[in-house]
Amino acid sequence: MDRPGTRRVAGLSGPVLLLSLLLLAACSAERQPTALPGVVAVTAERTRDEHGLATTRSRVTVTFDGPAVPAESRIPLASHFEVDVLQADGSTKRVLVRHAERSPADRRQVVLEVDALVTRGSTLRISRRAFDPGAAGTIDAEVTGGLEPVIALLASAALTPADPAFFDPPSPRAPDPAADDPSMMRRELERHLRQRGMAAASIVEALAIYDAIPAAVVPPPKLRAALAGLVGTFAEPALTDLLTAQNCTGLPAASIDFRTPPGSERLLARVTYTGNGARVLSVDPGLRDERFELLMPLLAHEAVHCDRFDSKVEEVAATAFDTLLYLQLLAADPSLARERTRLARELRIDALAFINSGGVWPESIGVLRSPGVMKVLPDTNAPQRSFAEFVAQAYPTVTTLESPTEPLAAAYMTVLATAAGIGAGDPFDLRQLDDLLGRVLDIADLVEVIRALGLEPVT
Image 1 (tube, rainbow, N blue to C red):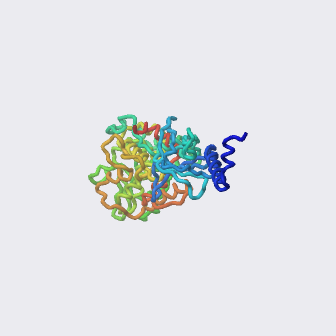
Image 2: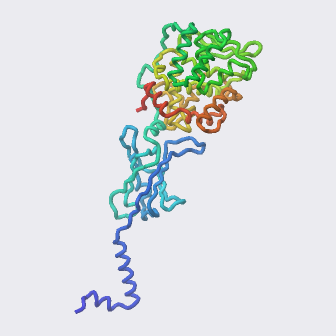
């Protein structure tokens, strides 16, 4: 006896039977589970704005093992993705995806936009419903390309000193018995050069330069040691610029000495000119007992000022160079951070603003505003948002914004660019200067500086 179902099918006409079979096949197909794509790779990259400046956002590319075809849904594709971003302390932070779309260049890829720096080691979670509305759970994949968590922290957060005494007024240093003793100062110079790890031949060269600097031009042994200490640094060209006629004046400096800088600004040092145009470099006598290593950045800065034109940009560039030199010296000798003198305080505060700046490479140093940093001197009343702003406001009597590029600043730039393996730009173009500065300080040196200064992320 035929089953009832069989009799009904048998009784259908041809077209009706065909339609019924097609519907039955379709219903059976719908009940089959959708094959979910597998994740092959997840990489993240920091996005940049139209000027090439860094942001605190990421573009995450998810590559599947086949065409990524999302299921039809009124829910935005981005809602099916989220990231557990690995933090520098090992914890994770849940971050939602702002936008998601299939890559027009590769059918296997989905590109995500995330309002955070997605780090290497983070976990991407993909809802299975993105590809099968009836599926439950997530597909988890590790982000194998992106910034390291520590780098992301430096690139997105300001640092502040843990010690509240960081900004305290300066304290005078005890009189330095070596200050006026050429032999003692020579030994101090040699000790410093060895601590920097200089080759023996370079130490001999630096000591020979110390011996050859005319005392009639540079009477204090400490200033002669500071000049000779520039050997082996990017600021070594300052020696030729100051002590020979190879500079914009066509004359060697007439005098480099401790004397009160002219003017009412209470400057640490200043360049003026003799009647025939030779430079006179005056260093505040109150700095006589400073460690000579701290005088090195000061002389490297003042040497930049050759022509009689000054500007805000020139002061920013010169201060950037002296602060970079200070950081390099500090990485070699962290004890410099313990000094509490006037010059040490100025260099220390400039260093904090320098570290909290950097538009192109915010995880390093720079002069432009760093994304995610509201003030370069957190926990203070200083409102400046970048190193450039901070330095510019320190020179109220300098009213000109720009001036011709100083040859020595260009020489510094060339030395640094050569070491970084890139082309030298214009040091008075702050975008180019910012880019270079962010490339020249080794991350290990930066970490040593942060440790020496006792800096920690703003909470």
